[in-house]
Length: 168
Image (tube, rainbow, N blue to C red; front, top):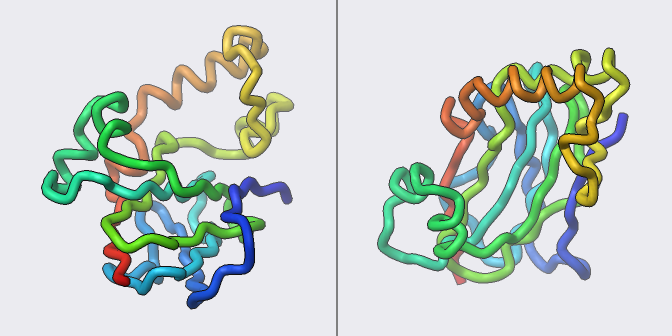
């Protein structure tokens, strides 16, 4: 079963943690880890899940406020670190390493109801996105399914977001 991962380069020097995504939380992800910790990701939920990891460059804004900001504003206060996604019942290839001390957040912004079987029935694999693909060029059935799902809350809205402090 395919899975996506963006890997940090090189052999990580720290501990490897197995993070588990469930509907709708991360399990096995402590509030604090030492720099160099590597995160792997397994999806034990019933829906497609991802773990987007960003380093928060603003040391004072509370996570709840950052999470509620428009994407452009929150992006100005954070740096992308890595991305892993996988289907239910699978472990993602790759990992994300938390190399620099600071505040990080792990989140899943997939919308509730993102059932891989519904996409598969339409011949569309959501684990293999094409960055150059124009969403308007997708088959009408896929566009309709995406529009229906986009009306649902994100997994982050349902609690799948967690701040992590990385210590030196």
